[in-house]
Image (tube, rainbow, N blue to C red; front, top):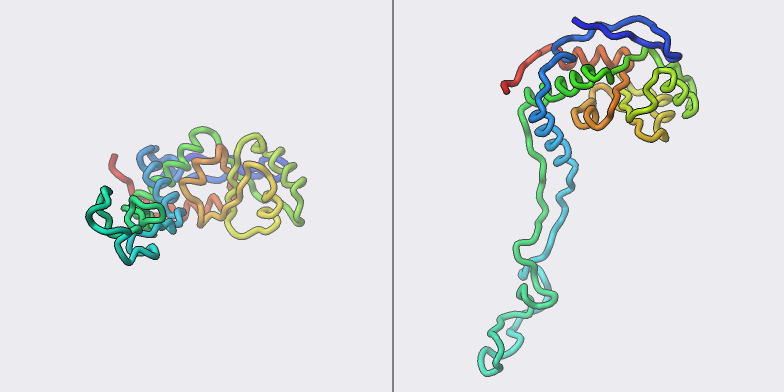
Length: 216
């Protein structure tokens, strides 16, 4: 079982935390990343796009001109698709894009994403941020001391911390999430992950208890 240094808000070592190999040394399977990110992004699509077919547009109750003798093609209604203002053929209709993948695959994808970041040396654990006020400047000082300010950063908290969440809100490329909402998409789109100590333990309890594996 590997361990990781826990840093204080000033960058000093404040202990260590044991890392569950089930969570942080899991197989890295890109096809699971793709499946889970695709599932997450598809859920965000509103699916409210819509068009009207010839039965939904107004007008066109009678033939636009007589059937024969005009030299033109026969027409039954001016709301046919070939006329301006006519209905749309096979246009998009409201639908849901959400689809599901097995929970075992989702858990394995998140374990793999965390293992990838740890293998890259992109995981940091902080004992406490020590923020007692809303201060973006102070948050920048803390992140600089921890050496994580240069890359896109995902801060993972164990519970709601308004001082941290609001102090980091205006920082570019920095996002804050709570441990229960940690997901593959956010892990992969940030180059570094900064865990609060309790958040790291919470994630290990969440993902390490079952320890399923998905076949290649």
